[in-house]
Image 1 (tube, rainbow, N blue to C red):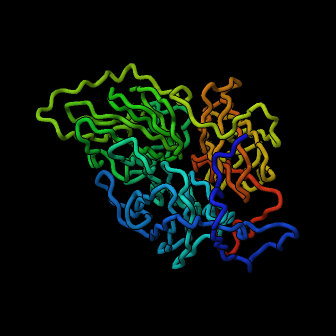
Image 2: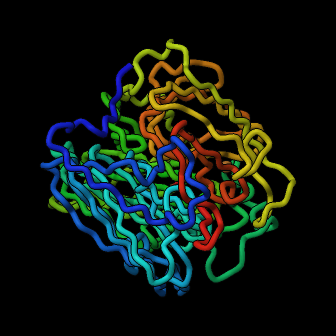
Length: 497
Ligand code: C2O
Ligand code: CU
């Protein structure tokens, strides 16, 4: 078994910065012989360059499709200000909260010490109006990540509290890169409602969240106001696609050949060229690379059955050619959806998958009638968070989780602080296992995943359709010997989802 994500590879000359315990006053009795997650040291490699950022959570008037509304933002834009660093950098982000309600920042996909994970009531207290909080972590692995609030996350991300976090590799395989953050909105008119959506089908497995939204956006804007991708003929472009919404989105490059370069921030080796339609699940990231070979400007669109898909049209403008001629657009009738399991190989994080797991956990996902605060309840083994059974592990365990979707809805399940290896789908082992931090489980599908418990603390494992998370579909990976001094609710109004 090999450990790919070694957080402590620089063991010589390491400077330990111990995080101050922010919340000792409100401890639920310190547990004897247990280590508080606040005492896990943050270790900055001596040679890591420090990169500073300031993010202010604040209200801003935002406009999509001619309608202005009050958005909640990081630094006044949607998405929030991009954080872009180089692999190996030590990232310091100072969060100031100018909103009227508490916020946090979670670094989605980053493997970092638990106390930097940004989950209110689990790894920190929510940052109160007027207060500040400083995050710091080592951006060890290059890739596409994103950040978002993890306090009242269903509402706060929905209103715009998210942005991209890009860790650039030291050696690049591309000339330019562009980030495309996808989202849905309810602005102007009311929700689409049941009646509205009956007409146009929609993506299966998302009946509930489709009723809520009638506008799609790319980088905070809808067509025709989406900023173009500018490319010179012959250049290679990396597209970093991040789904910040609660619905799947499909993208079509209009027959332009591309290859899938990375999934959830991890590179894919020997990927083949394709032009199939891409599907990106809520919370998921997919990087593509294409080399510009068209002689006419083109666009990326979204051949989805729902009407809002027209909002997604991303212009690709080509320069560096004398005369532009027609590009061909393929008939959208016979499009094929890409299958991520046969795009290429990922570096396994676990070599010996026949070793018997130390911990096995079965997760049955279901949607119930029991009413939660915001409507339906969404359950794991019949329970809603915080009453769901945690995955209890000890450091070093090999953990196997079998996820069964017993509902009619999609559940994009996301694990914090670890990557997992997807080893089987519907009972069949995958020839090319995927390494991810989020796996979308469609109705009645079953997946088996493996991960190594190598990052102590309390880590959420939840559905990234946050309508489902706020309705209860959340559990946690908890390490023996460690405890969180934070609590859900309480005087800081900690409310993770
Ligand atoms: Cu985007 Cu709990 O995560
Ligand atoms: Cu779900």
